[in-house]
Image 1 (tube, rainbow, N blue to C red):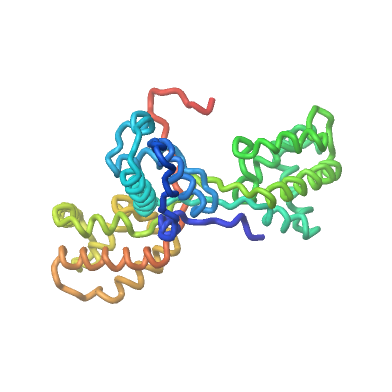
Image 2 (image 1 turned 90 degrees about the vertical axis):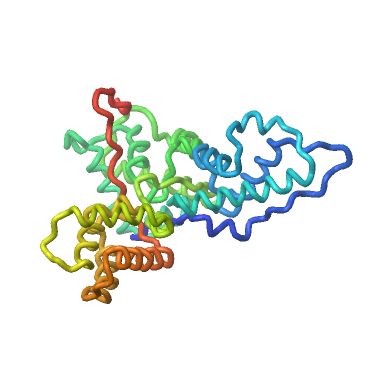
Length: 331
């Protein structure tokens, strides 16, 4: 069963974004707020309707020299300044996504309909959800567990979080999926089906685009920055030289270092299947080369960046680490 459609927002979608400013009205000033809101709306339209997070907007504004967004929003701009700000802001959003791509799920009801259209798939889904929620193994759960069932399905099954989909509360109430009345597995499935049907229909009319925060993207952008900076490259060469390796081959040393410290280069774990294949392909071509560490490292990083740019790799991010001494915010 395929999951929700995932998209990588890496800025490429904004190349064709509309950066034109509407014709000015006579003696009507343009505020900074109007320009920023127009740019954000245009960017969102090019990004499948994705609502730009505050962190992304903040970073993009810093790229165009705006350190105080509140102050800038109150400014009155001439048409020329407003027009250039619009172009520069959308360009900065594009650059920020290029350097820090985001994975999103398009929750449009298609994945849910796939479950509903196949009796066996739906029966298995309902059984698995019921089993997960029946913690005491009594064969009974309460009606209000339907909400938890949807939460357990999650974004990758096409269910957006309630914070992004407030209509879900109304759907649950409409179908009587509330209260402590207990249900057996068959009754649970009978209640789940119309709830999912209406959720799917609602999302088909108004899709919701949601961050998939536990998935990272390796697209080579960080490698490009390393390759372009000779001093940073030299630092990595020194680090490679000071580690111990089983092989004396420069290529083998570089591969061992990248596999061990890949995160320093914006790379996922070397155990990710796509990275194993990518490394095997690149290092098989240069295993016997003796051009020196600096030359080899630069060439290898360029090759890895080129391949990741053409075919970005998605990977699971490690769970966030709690700071020792601070309370767990989830409690």
